[in-house]
Length: 89
Image 1 (tube, rainbow, N blue to C red):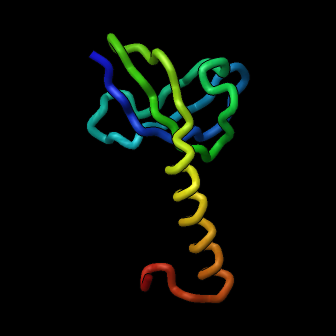
Image 2: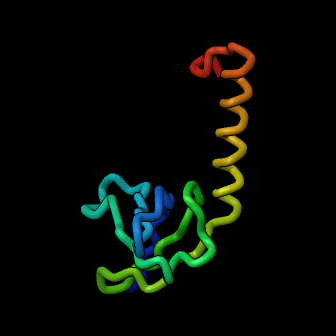
């Protein structure tokens, strides 16, 4: 049975991508993924890890979630630039 985990590409280290899952209940929150599985991904991108038999079979870039995350960060940055409190919004 396939399981899909939402995650973020944190950084590239040598031949591996360091990926963190959103699922705190998952016993593997951090994954070191071979670069060939994340060919077109860049740090900060949102991913979907397709796992079968406790192994990552494929990874997809979640373009919509990546765009939403970028928008959220951009809006926070703009509020900071304007001197507004981020907790208020």
